[in-house]
Length: 195
Image (tube, rainbow, N blue to C red; front, side, top):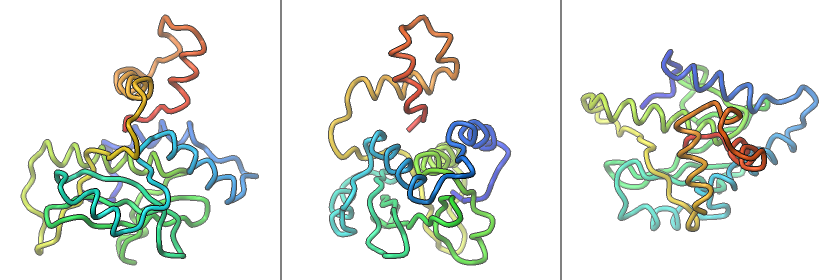
């Protein structure tokens, strides 16, 4: 999986940008609060979990299993902990100029997609992982380890309502056209992500 922008992911990115578009007057504090609120709704945000605790949780899982936690590095807010073919690893999420993106080497960093909040960032890489996994491409070059994000580890058992909301949002983008009470439509659109 790479962080490079591709035509196949532009649709999701365009849809998400209109949903989470930051207003010009938003402060960093407000943007971070919105991002944290979305993460809490997702259910796979573990908060103040250490790298060792994350490693222990992911140790016996399948490749691609992941969670998001608070970063132990002072310069970063969040970290994705994921199981790779060689064991658990951690990827820091950078917040700069009102946008979130994965931390990477300086050569690749300018080409990485940026997001208004963390959940669409994770959703983007889950989508790329599914494409990568379904194409069964060859091993990454130069002995590098491929990072896949395929299955979140929930901090607690998610509510059936939340799981249904994810399934419905995967099936249709026309929530307002569904024959449902407005209260349920509002619930479905509160968290419109597919992961």
